[in-house]
Amino acid sequence: MGEVRRVLIVGSSTASYSEAGPQSSEYALLESYLGRARPETDWRCEAELIYLTRSMAERTLAAVQERRPDVVVLRLVGGNFFNEYVIERLRQISPLAYRWSRDVAEWLRRLGGGGPHGLDTPRGWIYRLPRWLMAKTVGTAPRIRVEEAIAVVSATLDGLLQHEDLTTVVRLPSYPKTSDTNLKDYELRVRLFDRSVREYCERRRVPYYDWAEVRRMAGDERRIGGDGWHPVLDTRDLDARSMAAAVLLAVDGPSEVRLAPSSLEAVGLQA
Image (cartoon, rainbow, N blue to C red):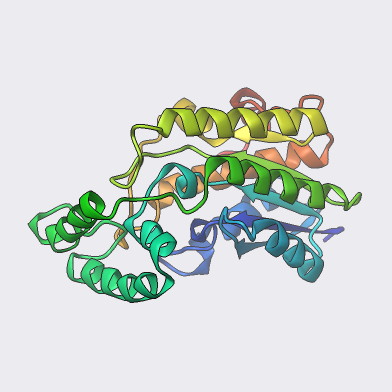
């Protein structure tokens, strides 16, 4: 085996989730695809659970300091700024009410079948009805405002770019709507975030690709697995394949900053 290259995925729990052992996790699939494409390199992939919150920059840079990767994939998800939650509104009103209601909400969610919204059956109303009533009376709020999300991503990339020997790749989100999505401001928030992150990457020459575009080109439909939270294996496999292609293009020094699906497909990674 040749040189060792370490790849760190920074993002949500989907990057490390597996319903059938670690080998079907996204980071393990990424490692497998990289190994197939460049067997002369000893690829070692890991995932760090870091959401798009106010502490993302600090936590990401700490993870880089600890793990010493050669490549970081900033796997962005957008739900924290385009979705709205009763629990976040309660946090704004009263920290005490937030702590109490968080436990109650989790208990009701389990009674309603689990997942973020309970089962899509009459049983799920055990969770959905109280949430609807609270939303009407208390209100909702995002976990982070979109302007803050943009600033946090910029600060994270600023810090990563200080490491001259580190290759950074950005995966833009696919912005799936859920029952928590603020439909009124959804398009505005998504357009603002998407445009701002693209402009940053192009200005600072950070390779990036559009996961939503990859999914559309592949005809991938949003399906959630049996745990009620994470995408099914087929979607995670597509995610890992496109991510592997983006990593290979980035370490080779891409001529284009925006890695379009056509350039990802040209790498030739197959399921």
